Image (cartoon, rainbow, N blue to C red; front, top):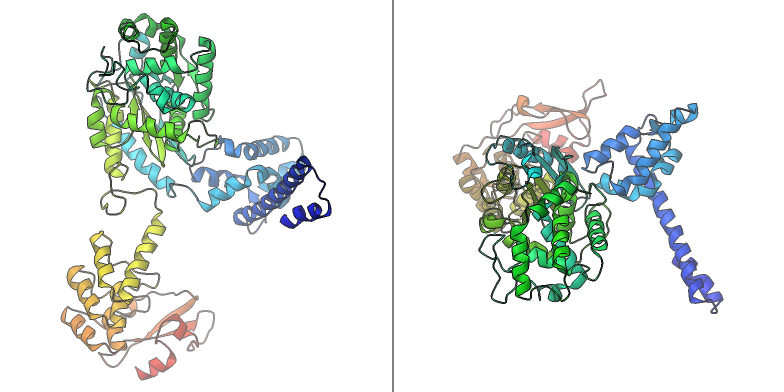
Length: 616
């Protein structure tokens, strides 16, 4: 591509800038087409049925959903639409019907071409939570455990909130990669209420910048009730998470425009944060909020008296704007995407669109951490250690920065105005996973880390243990042991650290593994060799004497040995006539009628060749 771009430019130096730009755009387009075609071929080869040489549509869909990606994900919009169109055409045409469930290579390429990079990412499992199914299993268990919580009651200061069924309970998750999980009543709409406050603050910061916004509002925890008629020492609201501070924030957003345009602007920003998921407006709630707003009107007039508002602010319009934003409707699913946008530094996980500036998100999460849970904020920061914001509708937006956003919704509230089930869920979540801001990601023992794949974790542990044992690195082994790693782990041949240390003659390591780590003395590898057998085979007498003193055994019974190996050969054991010499192992091809000594036995197991058998 580079050569194709450069060659014409050498021939003519009179090309205009516009011509050069068009030429480069065309070559970039061709390069993307080539890349897409290669990716399509790769994905087809991975997913195809070997017998049919076709790809099942059901396999495509199950692969997508298995990774935690929903079929409604906008990153797969064209692919899903093409599948739906193909299945619609199958009713009319017999030829199309043949391809409606199994796609040949050409049809497959046409269907997935627009979203093939996303499909490749799914197949590579290149996501922040690789074991998503197992993670959601734990989430479901916590969800069901919290369902039995019958404490609290729905807010009653307006009838729209009091009418909610107290049995409603929903949890939705959206990771920064767009992996999603929902359970419970996640489709039921509810109002944002106070959870709109951090969103409005982030919008104002993105639009105006931190310095301009904080001329009018502080950023300290107030230590008093969220609706107290009080200001800080600078005659400003304490922070944007209390009512007075949020009213000031509303007065700053697009303040020179008409109220309708300001509301429309914020709604569009909410929609972008939610990745175009459900967003609505509850007019009865808005009217009820305005009718019962004496306290907020008192706050507004008190702040006006102290010069908190920008010049020319219309107080009534500002309060209406505040009530309108509190009355915006979401469901748990769309609220989780909003929380995911905050977790992703202001970029929507579903669309990849930058909505909020990274600085705005940083400052917003800082205040959510210190001031987001009404009068329970300090305790929540101590016990859960995560940014969160609650609302009297029963919603909690929980953000795990750089990992995921979680929306919790259940109408019954505690005395601080937070969802009872939501608070319990947050506590159990942090108890199960190392999500607390100050949890160690290295030295944690009892908590799970969903960021790490189990295969990756276990393989790295095994490699670390065996490598340290082979190199007589007792310091590294001690470090691994203190991290709580299982020192009995073996590789695919069943060889443990004790096998390796004994074979190498590292007495200090063997002593450490046996006395300190208390590993098994007589584990057998896939050839039936114990650590003592290894020590004697390689003539490490001090190691052999030590292992014998602690109960080490050398003989192997055929019943204890594995029946197959990596090369589809059958394993047979020749018992030794001498007790101190290990049994020898020979292999014969399973497809042969005659049992003959395999010439590759030395490759299958060290020192198990025909010569070793004769010596034994």
